[in-house]
Image (cartoon, rainbow, N blue to C red; front, side, top):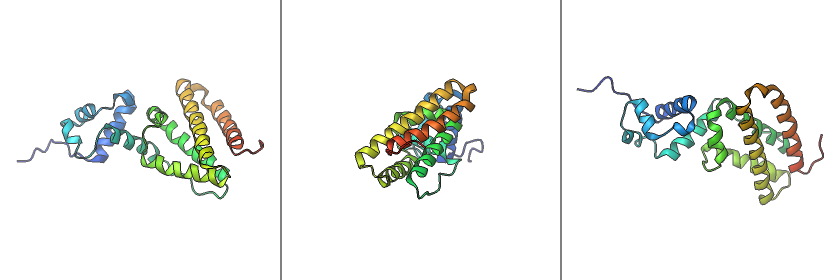
Length: 182
């Protein structure tokens, strides 16, 4: 006779549980064992749906961006760059637990692969070569992660921080594209 109290496990449920753990205890608390404990199943049961912890963390990063649609296409590469950075910033700001995952640069979730392509394309359309585009993306990503990390430490200063973020972002992109400030 089937056990009616048994949790019906799915990839979606596992990822949602991992997110709940990250939100309550921080992303470092997300382990396969802890997720299994929360679901009241054995850790081995998770591996039918999740390859390993890295797969789970990638899925968490994708989930951190899922509640906001990505920016639409823009003809002007500068406008596209601004929109991409703002989108990542807003998505990660809504999910502070994801900032350390994004900061490492070691995990490439699906959203990251698409963003890399869009960033590279915008930089290349602006006249940068492949090496310059990669360097420029690193500068923008470090700026974004630095801003988010500071905000997480000082949440009261968010309003002023948003104004300076926007101003600094425009200046950085102009400098990277070798444009005079506007």
